[in-house]
Length: 543
View 1 (cartoon, rainbow, N blue to C red):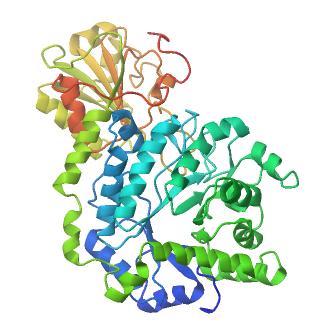
View 2 (view 1 turned 120 degrees about the vertical axis):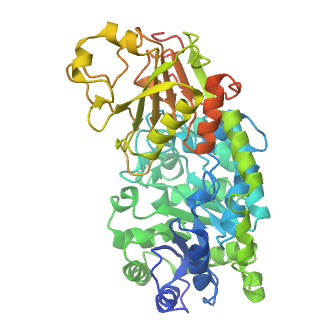
View 3 (view 1 turned 180 degrees about the vertical axis):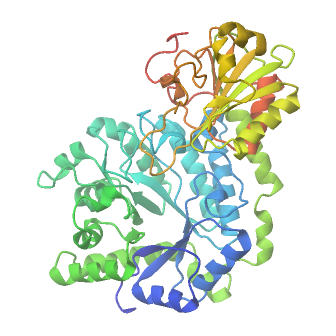
C-alpha cells in the first residue's frame, strides 16, 4: 500500500492507539494526524510516537483559531478573532499566530486549521460569528496576514478557511451545504479580495468548505450542478481557486464527517470525487480502510485519474517539505524537547491576552447612563447568568458572583435550573414591582452562548416565563438593567429594548477581569464593533 500515493487522509485519533495501530495508519495512507486537546506532556508523547516512527513524517494538526487551547489544555486563550478585530491592534493577528503556533508547536503540532478568513455578513449564521474578524475584508486580511507570518516563523503550515467563503446564509456545514449566493462582482470585492491577498502572501493550505457558490459556478461551467459544494466542485477548486486566484499550494477539505459533504452523494463516490475535483487531502474519516477502498475503487473505475492522485500526493509532500519535516526528521527534532513546553501559558502570551481583552471589549450602548456600575450607585444586584449549562454550580456563575461580591455588591443570583430565584420566592413575585424596587437597585444579565459546532442557532433561551417568572428582563423600566454578552455579539436581536449593552465576545478569566474593571470605571471601553450589533435595525431602535 505504501507504493500508492494515497497519503491524502488527515485522520483524527483518540489517544489510545498503540505503535502497531500507528504503523497501520501509515500503511493505510494517513498523511496527517489530529488529536483532540489534552494535557501537554501526554499529548506531546502521543505526537512523538506517531511522528518519529513513520517513514514520511505526518502533518500534525490542530484547530488553532483563538489560541493553543484548541490543541492543548492550559494553552493561552486569546479570546477569538472578533475580539481581536474589535481591539484594532495592528499586531493582533501576529500575536494570535505566535500564541497558537508557538505553544502548539512546543508539543510537536505543525499544521494549524486557521486563520478563519470568512466574513460575518449574516448575523443569523450559527457557525461563523465571533470566529471571524467581522465583515470588512481589509480587517480580515490584516489579522490573517499577521497570523500567516507568525505561523511561518514557527515552522507551521497554516490553512486559511473556509473557501469560497462562509457567513452568507443561516446554515452550518455540519448539517447542510452552506450557500454563498454572491455574484461575481460582490464576491470579488469581499471573499475574493481576502483570498487573493492571502494567496499572494504565500498561504500554504486552503481549507475548502462544503459551501456552494452557485452564481460563479454557473459562470465557470454551466454543465455542473451549481449547488455542488466546493469540496466536490472542480469549477470552484480548479477553475476559481487554482486558475483565477493562482493558488499553487495544498487544498484540504473541511471535515468529511459533516452533512454538508455526506448528503450530496454517496460517500463511496464522494471520496474519490473530492480528489478529482481538486482537493489534495481528506480531513477525517468515517472508517479509514473503507475510505481508502473507496479512493482505490474510484481510481480503478476512472472516476479519479491516477495523475490527479499523484499530483495531490506531490502537493502534500511539498507542504511537508516547506516546513522542513524531512530535515527535522533527520535531526530528530520533529517533536521538540520537553523543555519547550515552558512557552505554554507564558507571561508574554498572557500579557497579550490581557491586552486583547482591554482593547476589544465593546460598549455598544448606554442610553440610560448606567455605567459605571459601582456599589455606591447600585449596592444590591439581581444577577442572571444565561448559558447552555444551567446548573447553578457551573464555573461561570460562581465566578460572576465572586467577582461582583468582591467589588462590594450584594448579589442575588437567579437559579435557572429550578426556574426560581435564590432568596426570591414565588410569594415574593406576587408582591410585584414594589418588592422588586425595595430589594434590588439594578439587574445584570450575563449571556455566555458561544458559537459552537453542531448548534443551528445562537439565541437567548428564556426559562420560567410562565405566570410571574423573572427570567427575561420585564423590569428594565423599573430598575436599571445591564446586558453583557460573553459570546454571540447579536443578542440585541432578542433584547432590542436593553438600554445598556456590552459585547465581550468570549469568556475567559482574563476577559472577565478586564470586564469588571471596565464596569467599575477603572478602564475605558476601547473596542469598536466590526459587525452590526443592532442586526440591521439601526442604533436607535426601542431605546
